[in-house]
Amino acid sequence: MEQSKGLLEGKSTPFTAENWKTVRTILSEYFGTALFVFIGLASCINWTHKADPDQLIRIGLAFGLGLSGIIYMFGPISGAHVNPAVTIAFMILGRTKILVGLAYIFAQLTGAITGAGILYVIQIEDFTGTKSAQFGLTQVNPELDIAQGLFIELTITTIFILVILFLTDECWRDYKHVAAIGIGFTLLVLELGFVKATGGSLNPARSLGPAVIVSNYGQLWIYFLGPIIGGILAVVLFKCLSYVPEKPAAPTPLLTATPSTNPITPADSIIDGSVSVSDSESVDVIVVDGSGPVTIHGNTTAPTPRPSAAPGTAQSRI
Image (cartoon, rainbow, N blue to C red):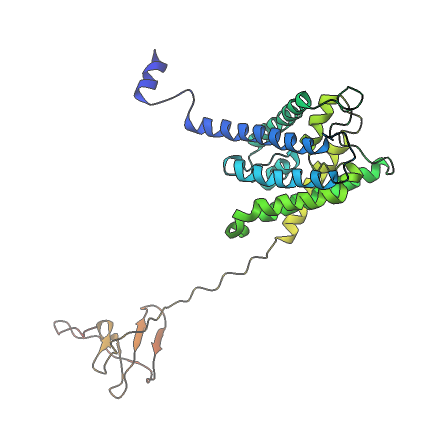
């Protein structure tokens, strides 16, 4: 009864606008990551069953430009992290609250699995009549060892997240409308350079999606550890590169003089006659502090003190 009364009076609601805003941002990360993984993995599939020499370029374009589009779509809602490594970096910098960041990561991981699952269902069969065993699975090139693969993922993720941190920083606010393009093209370039080495993940969620669908977790730890450490390193580099020592504050002047359009004539005196000006000179402005110095702007002789006017006589004008 009390709760119903409160609802009618508008004093409390079980689901406020602020609650919905939080849920909306989390759903944005879920759908954004699902769409990103869906588009990216689709470029890894050979849909024609023929030799595809352009697949490398297609993968880079799909992941890079796909991310740009997702940032434009979901960026105003949640920031469109779609990457746990990015969210962790933002949490460390204080740009994202801890609890919200953890909810983001959960939404990203589940969204990646959802996107990969939907693509797996609609994927055509390969030559042997079974679904592709690779399915965009990220694995270290057999020509490289595990340590090399881990180092590559760490390095390229550091570069990628460092670009994100700078393009989303307050000092770049005048260029925020092109930040999505810069981030997307950075991912595109990194994919083109390293997709043949490690699959070019840079994103734990992107690697988790296909790994869960095809039940292959052998090298998954590389694609969690590398990007997460890379994100932390990117934060350190960002703090170092963007640090500007604070300049000491300028001393506050004791007195401030403002030019006047009405010069003070020799007959004028300042404040109850305690200061006077020579009859042969004129000044622009005289500022007097009863307990401090006198500041005079203009060519004049030094002011000479004189006794205050006797009681009952007219005061000098200002």
